[in-house]
Length: 203
Image 1 (spheres, rainbow, N blue to C red):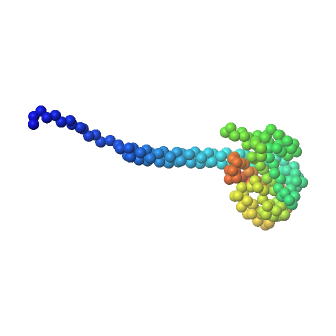
Image 2 (image 1 turned 180 degrees about the vertical axis):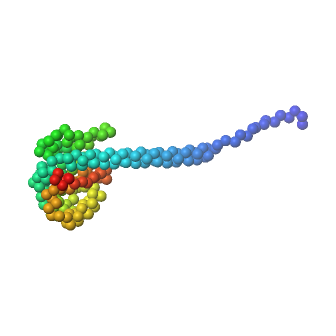
Image 3 (image 1 turned 90 degrees about the vertical axis):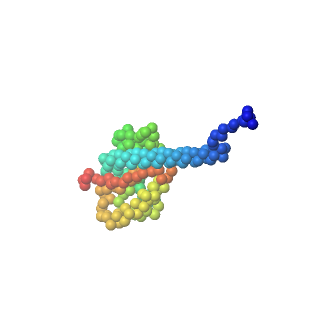
């Protein structure tokens, strides 16, 4: 039949609703994975930065303590340390102790510095001085201070064995020192360095 008119429909391929939802789900999964990755990366970077700063602070404090007057420190430790508390703990609150720290401002610069807008005060930096006497180390090994990180507690046992084998007269010329710096509130967010403060006669 001539002249018959037929409506012609053109078929175009497109995304169905299910395909669209599936694509959005996949994209969301990828976005969440990337967000998780970058969040962990930032946390890891921040953690390492805190560790690095803490170690550098601890090394600076250790170097500062080694330059102080040994006889004064040794006398203070002997008068303060006892069987119950076999160590002496020094923080920024002790910077006013003129006999130990003749320059309080220099002391506070070491014990309460401000680095990267973080103030390391209120005891976040602590120095522990321990005389080389077996009695004190036995007590320290059995009951270490709560401030000591786990790795330091393990180190204490090794050091105590060295003290048992050392010269009994060593305590007259040396003090064992541990510097602990906390950069966060969690127990693992702390670093420490160790050193020995000696009398000038054997330096």
